[in-house]
Image: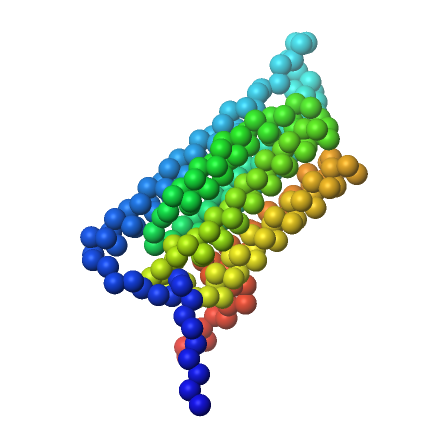
Length: 235
């Protein structure tokens, strides 16, 4: 008995001229390069919002140390936001690593996501200046949720619209990316619920999401495979 397996849409390669393939790849690269620029500017703005403490009394070593210690919530917020923003850039880069063509839907989804990326420095400053109040934290984590959700939506759109046509990505990698992004969507919703218990606890729990994605992308690579086995060493 012969069993025929239906090929996933991203496994098919449509006949196309070399020029057409190049135009499609160029379109994908332009979207990715624009996104890279927005991420880079947002990361720079994140640091520029930090201000040197202003001492009202004659500067001393003790006064400066005390002022820096009092700024720990600010440093925590900016450090976490920097890691989160870089984490989302990595996930965005991993997605575009497999795209072979762009679409109007992908361009607008990416543009909308970048709007929230550009907003994150403001969201971080809001949390820092207002001592992690509930309103500030909900605004901040709502911004993060929007980025997470739009990343997940972009991947769903890409797989459903044939933007992986001709890619060498195996189906299980597509499913891993989809699952990883959906886990992040529900996890950020969970942390938003924790705001009503403790804003500081809610923000601290975001670090677990960062650890998850750092391990997944650093160890799993582009395939997100944490169970990869090393080839046996030759004698």
